[in-house]
Amino acid sequence: MDDPATHGRPRLVDVVVAGHRGDAETARRALDSDDPRLREVALGALARTGELEATTVERLLREDPDPAVRRRACDLSARLPVSRPLLAALVAALGDPDVLVVEAACWALGESPSAPVDGLVHTARSHPDARAREAAVAAIGSIGDPRGLPAVIGALDDRPTVRRRAVVALAAFDGEEVRAALRRGAADRDWQVREVAEILLEGDPEEEEAP
Image (cartoon, rainbow, N blue to C red):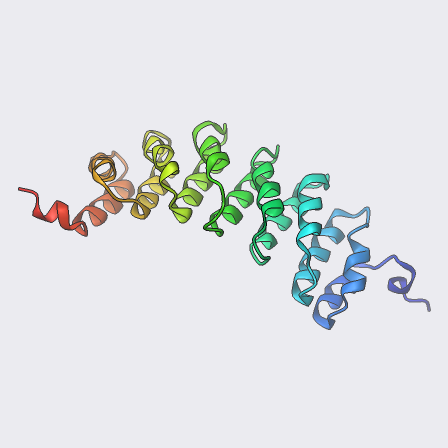
């Protein structure tokens, strides 16, 4: 019986096995499949073989019609060398219609200290879904760029899940503005926000020296 993988039509099992066998060619062929699940698995297989290229991730982030594939591309982008085109594709993904793709793009950007924060700031301030705002705030905290601080402080007025993430993100910054925000957090109606704020304030030497 003919093996479908030899005729340009790999099956799901072929692609999974290809990742373990180092068969990058089978995984690449699967990227052109009409089946989104096959394309998603192909990305993982290429990453496993060490043959996943940034250009592939960039193309799928911008062009693939299936959100699961775009999410997977975001996740795997963190394994690749940072480049301007890749960062640009991730920033563009912050405007994706699927909130889980936006979440994944935020996470991937947060993994790169050199990532631009403007898109994350916009997402943190104005995305209609709290999951995206929370992910953007977390990414800003991970990057630690001072230009993102106002968005983190502004997130202390958001929903509880976002406020919890914001108070954790404040740990990446310092200064009186940050201490004032932490004092606000210490009086938050959510006990988890209060707890983190209090811990951070207790560890601040300037707070300990204050009368």
